[in-house]
Length: 160
Image (cartoon, rainbow, N blue to C red; front, side, top):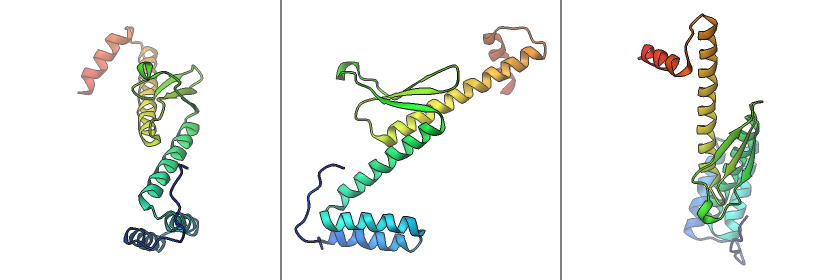
């Protein structure tokens, strides 16, 4: 967590009071584990007196955890790019292996939520490609003898 200012005594500013009231209201609808987590966030807000910084940290942390879990679910290892500014990737890139595993290279400093969105797009594109390959193989098994481009043109027109 980034260094946050620490108040000498718990903060009672209106901003902190609003944040704590929102947390207490959210706890009414939360399961016990989530309520405990919300209590911890409330404690951090009370101690630092900086709700915006704490919320930013929580969103960043949860985004990072979601990214990690999504990558693990799809057998993708995550790597941060070490490229210089001039050579930096514009977005996350996934390199797929024959076994279906992948290696994602994420631009340095990219927000986890952005990387997660890009990773979801890469996985969806990969799944479409795999489905297209299966459809093509089924077409060949049914006796259609054509190259991929001709097959794609024929099946794309038929779908319209």
